Length: 410
Image 1 (cartoon, rainbow, N blue to C red):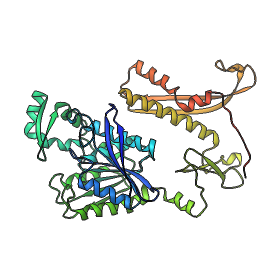
Image 2 (tube, helix red, strand yellow; image 1 turned 120 degrees about the vertical axis):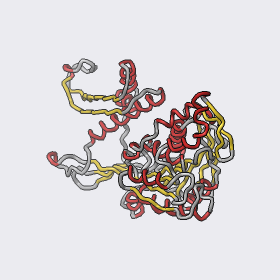
Image 3 (cartoon, rainbow, N blue to C red; image 1 turned 45 degrees about the vertical axis):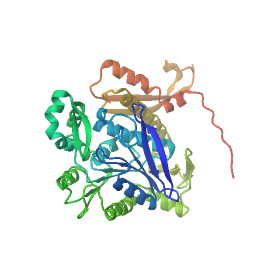
Image 4 (cartoon, rainbow, N blue to C red; image 1 turned 30 degrees about the vertical axis):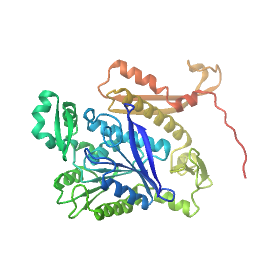
Protein backbone atom coordinates (compact mmCIF):
# COMPACT_ATOMS: atom_id res chain seq x y z
CA UNK A 1 0.00 0.00 0.00
CA UNK A 2 1.31 3.53 -0.75
CA UNK A 3 3.05 5.41 2.06
CA UNK A 4 3.65 9.05 1.21
CA UNK A 5 6.05 11.30 3.10
CA UNK A 6 4.45 14.68 3.69
CA UNK A 7 5.79 18.02 4.90
CA UNK A 8 3.76 21.01 6.02
CA UNK A 9 4.24 24.01 8.29
CA UNK A 10 2.96 25.00 11.71
CA UNK A 11 1.70 28.57 12.38
CA UNK A 12 5.28 29.61 13.21
CA UNK A 13 6.47 28.50 9.76
CA UNK A 14 8.42 25.49 11.07
CA UNK A 15 8.39 22.32 8.98
CA UNK A 16 6.47 19.34 10.35
CA UNK A 17 7.04 15.79 9.09
CA UNK A 18 4.25 13.36 8.36
CA UNK A 19 3.47 10.01 6.78
CA UNK A 20 0.23 9.43 4.89
CA UNK A 21 -0.84 5.79 4.81
CA UNK A 22 -2.98 5.39 1.68
CA UNK A 23 -5.29 2.49 0.70
CA UNK A 24 -4.70 0.66 -2.56
CA UNK A 25 -8.08 1.88 -3.80
CA UNK A 26 -9.70 5.32 -3.53
CA UNK A 27 -10.03 6.21 0.19
CA UNK A 28 -13.50 6.11 1.71
CA UNK A 29 -12.39 8.72 4.27
CA UNK A 30 -9.34 10.63 5.50
CA UNK A 31 -8.16 10.62 9.11
CA UNK A 32 -5.52 12.30 11.30
CA UNK A 33 -3.57 10.49 14.02
CA UNK A 34 -2.03 12.42 16.95
CA UNK A 35 0.65 10.57 18.92
CA UNK A 36 1.32 10.44 22.66
CA UNK A 37 3.28 12.95 24.77
CA UNK A 38 7.00 13.12 23.78
CA UNK A 39 6.45 10.22 21.32
CA UNK A 40 6.70 10.44 17.53
CA UNK A 41 4.67 9.40 14.51
CA UNK A 42 6.84 6.28 14.25
CA UNK A 43 5.85 4.77 17.58
CA UNK A 44 4.68 1.18 17.01
CA UNK A 45 1.04 1.81 17.96
CA UNK A 46 0.70 4.77 15.57
CA UNK A 47 2.37 2.89 12.73
CA UNK A 48 0.33 -0.28 13.19
CA UNK A 49 -3.03 1.45 13.61
CA UNK A 50 -2.63 3.77 10.61
CA UNK A 51 -1.44 0.93 8.36
CA UNK A 52 -4.34 -1.24 9.45
CA UNK A 53 -6.80 1.59 8.79
CA UNK A 54 -5.36 2.04 5.31
CA UNK A 55 -5.92 -1.70 4.72
CA UNK A 56 -9.57 -0.99 5.53
CA UNK A 57 -9.90 1.98 3.16
CA UNK A 58 -9.19 4.91 5.52
CA UNK A 59 -6.26 7.13 4.48
CA UNK A 60 -4.52 8.30 7.66
CA UNK A 61 -1.90 10.99 8.19
CA UNK A 62 0.35 10.63 11.25
CA UNK A 63 2.82 13.40 11.95
CA UNK A 64 5.43 14.59 14.45
CA UNK A 65 4.48 17.49 16.67
CA UNK A 66 6.86 20.47 16.72
CA UNK A 67 10.29 19.60 18.13
CA UNK A 68 9.72 15.83 18.06
CA UNK A 69 10.70 13.08 15.62
CA UNK A 70 11.59 14.54 12.22
CA UNK A 71 9.79 17.85 12.71
CA UNK A 72 11.61 21.15 13.13
CA UNK A 73 11.37 23.40 16.16
CA UNK A 74 12.39 23.32 19.81
CA UNK A 75 10.27 21.05 22.01
CA UNK A 76 10.95 23.24 25.05
CA UNK A 77 9.13 26.12 23.35
CA UNK A 78 6.02 24.04 22.68
CA UNK A 79 2.97 23.42 24.84
CA UNK A 80 -0.45 21.81 24.62
CA UNK A 81 -1.87 24.81 22.73
CA UNK A 82 0.85 24.53 20.09
CA UNK A 83 0.08 20.80 19.75
CA UNK A 84 -3.53 21.69 18.97
CA UNK A 85 -2.33 24.27 16.43
CA UNK A 86 -0.09 21.62 14.82
CA UNK A 87 -3.11 19.31 14.56
CA UNK A 88 -5.18 21.99 12.85
CA UNK A 89 -2.27 22.74 10.48
CA UNK A 90 -2.15 19.04 9.55
CA UNK A 91 -5.91 19.04 8.90
CA UNK A 92 -5.60 22.13 6.70
CA UNK A 93 -2.79 20.45 4.76
CA UNK A 94 -4.96 17.40 4.11
CA UNK A 95 -7.84 19.58 2.97
CA UNK A 96 -5.65 21.62 0.61
CA UNK A 97 -3.84 18.65 -0.92
CA UNK A 98 -6.18 15.66 -0.58
CA UNK A 99 -9.46 15.92 1.32
CA UNK A 100 -10.48 17.38 4.66
CA UNK A 101 -10.29 14.79 7.46
CA UNK A 102 -13.56 13.30 8.67
CA UNK A 103 -11.93 11.42 11.55
CA UNK A 104 -9.49 12.41 14.33
CA UNK A 105 -7.63 9.77 16.34
CA UNK A 106 -5.52 10.64 19.38
CA UNK A 107 -3.35 8.42 21.57
CA UNK A 108 -2.70 9.47 25.19
CA UNK A 109 -2.12 13.26 25.29
CA UNK A 110 -2.79 13.21 21.54
CA UNK A 111 -6.31 12.14 22.53
CA UNK A 112 -6.69 15.25 24.66
CA UNK A 113 -5.41 17.28 21.69
CA UNK A 114 -8.01 15.89 19.26
CA UNK A 115 -10.78 16.52 21.80
CA UNK A 116 -9.67 20.18 21.92
CA UNK A 117 -8.87 20.64 18.23
CA UNK A 118 -12.04 19.01 16.85
CA UNK A 119 -14.03 22.15 17.71
CA UNK A 120 -12.14 24.10 15.02
CA UNK A 121 -12.48 21.48 12.27
CA UNK A 122 -15.93 21.48 10.70
CA UNK A 123 -15.11 18.54 8.40
CA UNK A 124 -14.55 16.21 11.36
CA UNK A 125 -17.57 14.04 12.11
CA UNK A 126 -16.00 11.57 14.53
CA UNK A 127 -13.27 11.54 17.20
CA UNK A 128 -11.41 8.57 18.69
CA UNK A 129 -9.31 8.60 21.88
CA UNK A 130 -6.94 5.81 22.95
CA UNK A 131 -5.71 5.76 26.54
CA UNK A 132 -6.33 9.50 26.73
CA UNK A 133 -6.59 11.79 29.77
CA UNK A 134 -9.72 13.90 30.11
CA UNK A 135 -7.64 17.09 30.15
CA UNK A 136 -4.10 18.20 29.35
CA UNK A 137 -3.55 19.06 33.02
CA UNK A 138 -3.24 15.32 33.67
CA UNK A 139 0.43 15.36 32.55
CA UNK A 140 1.30 17.76 35.36
CA UNK A 141 2.07 14.82 37.65
CA UNK A 142 5.00 13.92 35.37
CA UNK A 143 6.74 17.11 36.48
CA UNK A 144 5.78 16.92 40.17
CA UNK A 145 9.34 16.38 41.38
CA UNK A 146 10.63 19.31 39.31
CA UNK A 147 7.62 21.61 39.68
CA UNK A 148 9.22 24.05 42.12
CA UNK A 149 12.41 24.27 40.04
CA UNK A 150 10.39 24.94 36.87
CA UNK A 151 8.44 27.71 38.59
CA UNK A 152 11.44 29.42 40.22
CA UNK A 153 14.01 28.94 37.42
CA UNK A 154 11.46 29.10 34.58
CA UNK A 155 12.71 25.74 33.28
CA UNK A 156 14.09 22.34 34.30
CA UNK A 157 15.30 19.11 32.75
CA UNK A 158 12.71 16.40 33.34
CA UNK A 159 13.09 12.64 32.79
CA UNK A 160 10.18 11.40 30.69
CA UNK A 161 10.25 7.74 29.74
CA UNK A 162 14.03 7.50 30.12
CA UNK A 163 14.74 10.63 28.04
CA UNK A 164 15.47 14.14 29.27
CA UNK A 165 13.29 17.01 28.07
CA UNK A 166 13.51 20.68 28.96
CA UNK A 167 10.18 21.82 30.37
CA UNK A 168 9.56 25.54 30.72
CA UNK A 169 7.16 27.35 33.02
CA UNK A 170 5.06 28.43 30.04
CA UNK A 171 4.20 24.74 29.50
CA UNK A 172 2.90 24.47 33.08
CA UNK A 173 0.96 27.72 32.70
CA UNK A 174 -0.56 26.54 29.41
CA UNK A 175 -1.91 23.20 30.66
CA UNK A 176 -3.57 25.05 33.56
CA UNK A 177 -5.95 26.42 30.91
CA UNK A 178 -7.02 22.89 29.96
CA UNK A 179 -8.03 21.52 33.35
CA UNK A 180 -11.76 21.36 32.56
CA UNK A 181 -13.84 18.86 30.59
CA UNK A 182 -16.38 21.50 29.56
CA UNK A 183 -15.19 21.50 25.94
CA UNK A 184 -15.91 17.75 25.69
CA UNK A 185 -19.58 18.43 26.39
CA UNK A 186 -19.62 20.88 23.48
CA UNK A 187 -17.89 18.51 21.06
CA UNK A 188 -20.93 17.81 18.86
CA UNK A 189 -19.08 14.93 17.15
CA UNK A 190 -19.45 11.18 17.47
CA UNK A 191 -16.96 9.91 20.07
CA UNK A 192 -15.29 6.51 20.53
CA UNK A 193 -13.18 5.96 23.67
CA UNK A 194 -10.62 3.14 24.01
CA UNK A 195 -8.96 2.50 27.37
CA UNK A 196 -7.36 -0.36 29.22
CA UNK A 197 -8.39 -1.15 32.80
CA UNK A 198 -4.73 -1.97 33.56
CA UNK A 199 -3.26 1.19 31.98
CA UNK A 200 -0.54 2.22 34.44
CA UNK A 201 0.15 5.57 32.77
CA UNK A 202 -3.35 7.03 32.38
CA UNK A 203 -5.98 5.64 34.75
CA UNK A 204 -9.18 4.27 33.27
CA UNK A 205 -10.90 6.82 35.53
CA UNK A 206 -9.90 9.38 32.89
CA UNK A 207 -11.94 7.48 30.29
CA UNK A 208 -14.90 7.61 32.66
CA UNK A 209 -14.53 11.39 32.95
CA UNK A 210 -14.44 11.77 29.14
CA UNK A 211 -17.49 9.53 28.72
CA UNK A 212 -19.45 11.34 31.43
CA UNK A 213 -18.63 14.78 29.99
CA UNK A 214 -19.48 13.84 26.40
CA UNK A 215 -22.92 13.80 24.82
CA UNK A 216 -24.26 11.04 22.62
CA UNK A 217 -23.38 9.53 20.23
CA UNK A 218 -20.54 8.12 22.35
CA UNK A 219 -19.10 4.63 22.80
CA UNK A 220 -16.56 2.97 25.10
CA UNK A 221 -14.41 -0.06 24.28
CA UNK A 222 -12.29 -1.75 26.95
CA UNK A 223 -8.80 -2.85 25.87
CA UNK A 224 -8.46 -5.78 28.26
CA UNK A 225 -4.85 -6.57 29.28
CA UNK A 226 -3.38 -3.88 26.95
CA UNK A 227 -0.62 -1.58 28.18
CA UNK A 228 -0.62 2.18 27.62
CA UNK A 229 1.53 2.08 24.46
CA UNK A 230 -0.37 -0.88 22.93
CA UNK A 231 2.91 -2.75 22.68
CA UNK A 232 1.11 -5.93 21.68
CA UNK A 233 0.49 -5.93 17.93
CA UNK A 234 -2.88 -7.68 18.36
CA UNK A 235 -4.14 -4.76 20.48
CA UNK A 236 -3.32 -2.26 17.72
CA UNK A 237 -4.98 -4.45 15.12
CA UNK A 238 -8.08 -4.74 17.28
CA UNK A 239 -8.27 -0.96 17.75
CA UNK A 240 -8.00 -0.41 13.99
CA UNK A 241 -10.70 -2.98 13.19
CA UNK A 242 -13.14 -1.43 15.67
CA UNK A 243 -12.40 2.12 14.43
CA UNK A 244 -12.96 1.05 10.83
CA UNK A 245 -16.35 -0.51 11.55
CA UNK A 246 -17.49 2.28 13.86
CA UNK A 247 -16.29 5.08 11.54
CA UNK A 248 -18.29 3.72 8.61
CA UNK A 249 -21.37 5.19 10.27
CA UNK A 250 -19.89 8.59 11.07
CA UNK A 251 -16.76 9.32 9.04
CA UNK A 252 -18.22 8.63 5.60
CA UNK A 253 -21.48 9.66 4.02
CA UNK A 254 -22.92 6.16 3.74
CA UNK A 255 -26.34 7.37 2.59
CA UNK A 256 -24.85 9.37 -0.25
CA UNK A 257 -22.47 6.53 -1.12
CA UNK A 258 -25.41 4.10 -1.26
CA UNK A 259 -27.38 6.46 -3.50
CA UNK A 260 -24.41 6.85 -5.83
CA UNK A 261 -23.79 3.11 -6.01
CA UNK A 262 -27.45 2.59 -6.92
CA UNK A 263 -27.25 5.28 -9.58
CA UNK A 264 -29.73 7.63 -7.87
CA UNK A 265 -27.05 10.14 -6.87
CA UNK A 266 -24.53 11.41 -9.42
CA UNK A 267 -20.77 11.49 -9.09
CA UNK A 268 -19.64 15.14 -9.13
CA UNK A 269 -16.06 16.40 -9.66
CA UNK A 270 -14.38 18.45 -6.93
CA UNK A 271 -15.30 22.14 -7.20
CA UNK A 272 -18.48 21.48 -9.19
CA UNK A 273 -22.12 21.69 -8.07
CA UNK A 274 -24.88 19.71 -9.80
CA UNK A 275 -28.59 20.46 -9.40
CA UNK A 276 -31.22 17.81 -10.20
CA UNK A 277 -35.01 17.68 -9.85
CA UNK A 278 -36.57 15.86 -6.91
CA UNK A 279 -40.10 16.64 -8.04
CA UNK A 280 -41.78 18.59 -10.83
CA UNK A 281 -42.41 21.59 -8.59
CA UNK A 282 -39.52 23.29 -6.77
CA UNK A 283 -37.67 20.60 -4.78
CA UNK A 284 -34.11 20.17 -6.05
CA UNK A 285 -31.17 17.96 -5.17
CA UNK A 286 -27.89 19.83 -4.71
CA UNK A 287 -24.81 17.62 -5.14
CA UNK A 288 -21.11 18.33 -4.57
CA UNK A 289 -18.24 15.85 -4.63
CA UNK A 290 -18.86 14.96 -0.96
CA UNK A 291 -22.22 16.35 0.11
CA UNK A 292 -25.90 16.31 -0.76
CA UNK A 293 -28.38 19.09 0.08
CA UNK A 294 -31.97 19.96 -0.80
CA UNK A 295 -33.37 23.26 -2.09
CA UNK A 296 -37.07 24.09 -2.24
CA UNK A 297 -39.63 26.86 -1.87
CA UNK A 298 -42.10 27.33 1.02
CA UNK A 299 -45.59 25.89 0.74
CA UNK A 300 -47.20 29.31 0.36
CA UNK A 301 -45.24 29.71 -2.89
CA UNK A 302 -46.17 26.28 -4.21
CA UNK A 303 -43.20 24.30 -2.87
CA UNK A 304 -42.97 21.51 -0.28
CA UNK A 305 -40.63 23.37 2.13
CA UNK A 306 -38.13 20.46 2.21
CA UNK A 307 -35.11 22.76 2.17
CA UNK A 308 -33.89 26.37 2.01
CA UNK A 309 -34.84 28.46 -1.02
CA UNK A 310 -32.21 29.71 -3.50
CA UNK A 311 -31.86 33.15 -1.88
CA UNK A 312 -31.37 31.53 1.53
CA UNK A 313 -28.53 29.49 0.04
CA UNK A 314 -27.09 32.71 -1.41
CA UNK A 315 -27.21 34.35 2.02
CA UNK A 316 -25.77 31.20 3.58
CA UNK A 317 -22.81 31.30 1.18
CA UNK A 318 -22.10 34.93 2.01
CA UNK A 319 -22.65 34.45 5.75
CA UNK A 320 -20.48 31.36 6.13
CA UNK A 321 -17.69 32.93 4.08
CA UNK A 322 -17.87 36.09 6.21
CA UNK A 323 -17.74 34.10 9.45
CA UNK A 324 -14.84 31.93 8.24
CA UNK A 325 -12.85 34.96 7.11
CA UNK A 326 -13.28 36.71 10.46
CA UNK A 327 -12.33 33.59 12.40
CA UNK A 328 -9.27 32.88 10.25
CA UNK A 329 -7.99 36.43 10.73
CA UNK A 330 -8.68 36.44 14.48
CA UNK A 331 -6.84 33.14 14.96
CA UNK A 332 -3.89 34.29 12.89
CA UNK A 333 -3.55 37.57 14.78
CA UNK A 334 -4.22 36.13 18.23
CA UNK A 335 -7.40 38.17 18.76
CA UNK A 336 -9.49 36.90 21.70
CA UNK A 337 -12.63 36.22 19.64
CA UNK A 338 -14.87 33.74 21.49
CA UNK A 339 -17.64 33.53 18.91
CA UNK A 340 -18.92 35.20 15.76
CA UNK A 341 -22.51 35.21 14.49
CA UNK A 342 -23.62 36.58 11.14
CA UNK A 343 -27.27 37.34 10.37
CA UNK A 344 -28.32 38.19 6.82
CA UNK A 345 -31.47 39.24 4.98
CA UNK A 346 -32.25 40.09 1.35
CA UNK A 347 -34.64 42.68 -0.01
CA UNK A 348 -35.17 44.67 -3.17
CA UNK A 349 -35.28 48.44 -2.77
CA UNK A 350 -35.82 51.42 -5.06
CA UNK A 351 -32.54 52.78 -6.36
CA UNK A 352 -33.36 56.32 -5.29
CA UNK A 353 -33.63 55.05 -1.68
CA UNK A 354 -30.16 53.49 -1.81
CA UNK A 355 -27.30 55.91 -1.13
CA UNK A 356 -24.54 53.40 -1.99
CA UNK A 357 -26.08 52.21 -5.26
CA UNK A 358 -24.81 53.29 -8.68
CA UNK A 359 -28.19 52.85 -10.34
CA UNK A 360 -30.43 55.88 -10.19
CA UNK A 361 -33.74 54.21 -11.09
CA UNK A 362 -35.52 50.88 -10.80
CA UNK A 363 -35.06 48.24 -8.11
CA UNK A 364 -31.74 47.02 -6.74
CA UNK A 365 -30.91 44.03 -4.55
CA UNK A 366 -29.91 44.85 -1.00
CA UNK A 367 -28.33 42.44 1.52
CA UNK A 368 -28.18 43.43 5.17
CA UNK A 369 -25.42 41.68 7.09
CA UNK A 370 -25.27 41.97 10.90
CA UNK A 371 -22.13 40.70 12.62
CA UNK A 372 -22.03 39.90 16.34
CA UNK A 373 -18.54 39.51 17.82
CA UNK A 374 -18.21 37.97 21.29
CA UNK A 375 -15.10 38.21 23.42
CA UNK A 376 -12.84 40.63 25.26
CA UNK A 377 -12.23 42.76 22.16
CA UNK A 378 -11.11 46.37 22.00
CA UNK A 379 -12.99 48.88 19.87
CA UNK A 380 -10.09 48.90 17.41
CA UNK A 381 -10.17 45.08 17.12
CA UNK A 382 -13.91 45.10 16.48
CA UNK A 383 -13.56 47.67 13.71
CA UNK A 384 -10.66 45.73 12.20
CA UNK A 385 -12.69 42.49 12.14
CA UNK A 386 -15.60 44.36 10.56
CA UNK A 387 -13.27 45.59 7.82
CA UNK A 388 -11.85 42.09 7.33
CA UNK A 389 -15.39 40.76 6.86
CA UNK A 390 -15.62 42.73 3.61
CA UNK A 391 -12.62 40.77 2.28
CA UNK A 392 -14.59 37.53 2.28
CA UNK A 393 -14.17 36.00 -1.22
CA UNK A 394 -17.92 35.51 -1.71
CA UNK A 395 -18.51 39.15 -0.68
CA UNK A 396 -15.99 40.23 -3.33
CA UNK A 397 -17.59 37.99 -5.95
CA UNK A 398 -21.03 39.48 -5.37
CA UNK A 399 -19.65 43.01 -5.68
CA UNK A 400 -17.59 42.28 -8.79
CA UNK A 401 -18.91 42.25 -12.31
CA UNK A 402 -20.04 38.64 -12.86
CA UNK A 403 -20.18 36.79 -16.18
CA UNK A 404 -22.45 33.73 -16.27
CA UNK A 405 -22.11 31.49 -19.33
CA UNK A 406 -25.13 29.23 -20.00
CA UNK A 407 -24.88 26.44 -22.58
CA UNK A 408 -27.04 23.48 -23.54
CA UNK A 409 -25.45 20.03 -23.16
CA UNK A 410 -26.59 16.53 -24.06
